Length: 383
Image 1: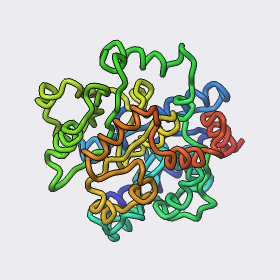
Image 2: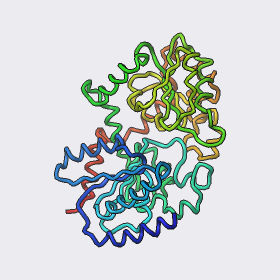
Image 3: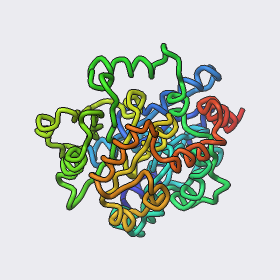
Image 4: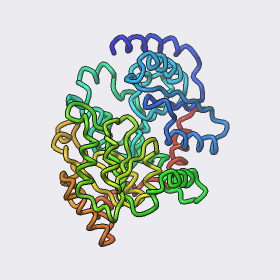
C-alpha cells in the first residue's frame, strides 16, 4: 500500500498540470458492472442537464485481479484529478490517497441505504476491519466534501464510519429509492419482475418468504448457508409458504441437494434482490442493508441472526437487532419459522417496530432522489 501511495502521489502531481474539466465523473471499485444507482443517476443528469459532460471509470476490487486493479486505479486517478466533480460509492484509492486538487469536489454516495453492521473507521481494529496502520496507510475515506446518505438516521453511523462531522452527511437518499417506488406497470422494474416470474413460477404460485442474508466469509462459515437454510426448513410451514433463497453470487456454500428434500424450498441465483423483493410478501435477512429496501416496499421483515454475539464483537453493530426489534428477530431458526407461520395465519405483517423505524428513517428523503442528487452535483460545477 505504501508503494501504491507513493506512485499515486507522483502521478497526481503530473496529472494536475493538465486542465481541470467541467465534468462529473463516477468512480467505483465495487464491480466491473455499473451499479443501479449510478445508471439511474447518470440517466437523470443526461435528462436534466444534457450539456453536462459525464464520465465513468469503474474497477473491480484488488481481490479479483491485482494487475487490472492497478491499471484501473491509474485510469481513475486521471479522472479524479481532471474533473470538477468526483462521485464515489465506496473507498477509491485514486481519490483518497493523493492530495485533492483545488477546485475538485468529491461526493461519497455510499452503495447501501443504511448500515446495520459497522464499517469503515467504526470497525478498525476488529477482525472484520482494517488495522489502524492499514487504514492510515490507505488514507481511508479521506478527501470527501459531502457524504450522501440513504436516510437521516444514518448520519451518526456515517459520521463515525467515514470520520466526518454529521453536518457533512446529506440525506438525499439513493436513486434506487426511485426505482423501488416506481409503480408504473411499464417501468424497467416491472419488466424485470415479469421476467423473474416467468423464469421462476414458484414466485407467484403461492406466498413466498425470501431469505436474503449477508455474505459470510472466514473460518467457521464454510457451509454456513446450507446450515442456516436447513435449520429454517426443518421447522418451516411448507404447506402454506415457499422459502426462497437469494444466494449471493460470490457464495458457493449452498448444498442444492436440500431442494430435493424440501419441496417448498427454492433457490434463485443471478437475480437482483431488489427485483425479487417485488414478488414476495415476507423477507428474512440479518445484517444486510436489504432490510431497508424491503422495509421501504412495506414487506414484513424478520431477522435470523444466530451469530449475533460474534457480529457484536466484529465488525460491531449500529443496530442491535435483538434489542431494537425483538418481535422480528431471533437466534433460533425454529422459533422464527413458527413466528412467521403464525403471522401469516393471522394476516399480520411482521413487527411494528421495524416498520416504524423505516418510516422515520426515510421521512426526510426527497420525493425524487435522482433529481435531488443530480441538482446537487450540478450545483458543484463551476462555470
